[in-house]
Image (cartoon, rainbow, N blue to C red; front, top):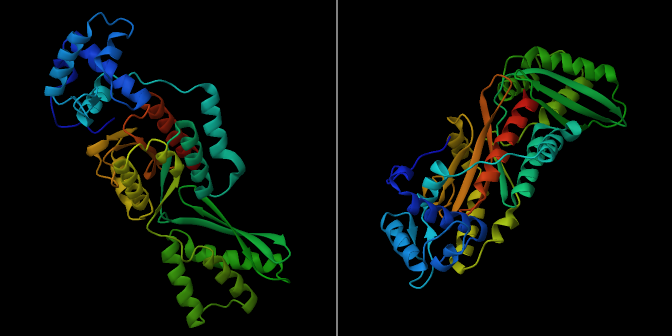
Length: 353
């Protein structure tokens, strides 16, 4: 499920006493995001060691690279390696409640709008449930097309419905001006369907524009206007894919120092960079489910000091077309967020398929 760190020791190399102290430090850190001292650990249920004995164990864990002291007199925090070892070897993943599942599914399916609207709603609810930032990689329109249709609304308006061969449906509202009859829209749709079927949008658009410019088509002026309006609804869209990020402000809730603020500012700048779309998709593409990137492990964005939990979602052909996840501090509630991201990706895949 995860990208393993190529470092040792493994969790099995720790004796029972070291494992319980290590677990206590990490679990306390995940709740409070603060260093944990030996006296605090000595008060935990089931811990029978004295503070002095706990300090000795913590020193051994620090020597192993699993804990560190941010200040000389402070308690200990888990290193990125320590967090990775905990997530891979000790984390007990929870499950979503029925209400949470229903909320995710309902919000994603609500309204029957475009794919982008659905992905925005999915990212909104992930951000709300996790209290972190939600991020989704939205695919470009590269799938071959199957069908286009104009739905007459009256008052010079129509909805353009575009369907891909994988079953993804996109809707756009267009203004045509008064006096456009439904018959002209049917003729325009027939013309477009003959030329776009089995082609990507860009391929079809290039062919149709060349025909119109060469006046090889037999369309009257009104029908040609509808054809051009239909093409224009997708012209100029980002064909490289993009990122949708919701809940930016939640990343600021954990900021406690100037260095933290600078890190979050840099993360904001990276999230605005559309090129990061492909990098996020590449991280998730080879995974069967959720992948977790902790602190300095991250190759995505400038995420040192943050964690990313991400899962791919697929189309009707079970091809990975995008990825959705949560970004937050390294003391994420992984046990809660992992099933949340996984279930949301599954819901998106079912709705697309």
